[in-house]
Length: 117
Image (cartoon, rainbow, N blue to C red):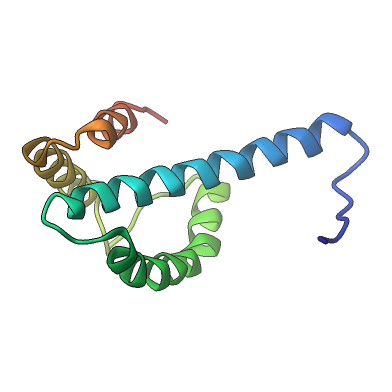
């Protein structure tokens, strides 16, 4: 079993935090399932892909605290990875996904690209 965590006096806060966690989980699984489908078009099994994806995804979670700091400050400037660089990566995923016939995530990425902060 898990542990209890006090999240404040406002009951809606706990529900909202849970919803945020669920949104994070479903987004991660959607990306994983799409990745598995994408590499599956070339005969890579989901098990083979998982052996690469699980440690890779775990390593990416180490970036969450620094990303949270940027979000809380509202300062997204960087000299490491520009928005253009990341957009290029998302464009690549969309093109390859459509080419391989696995474009469901490509439509999701397109929606994300259209978000404005």
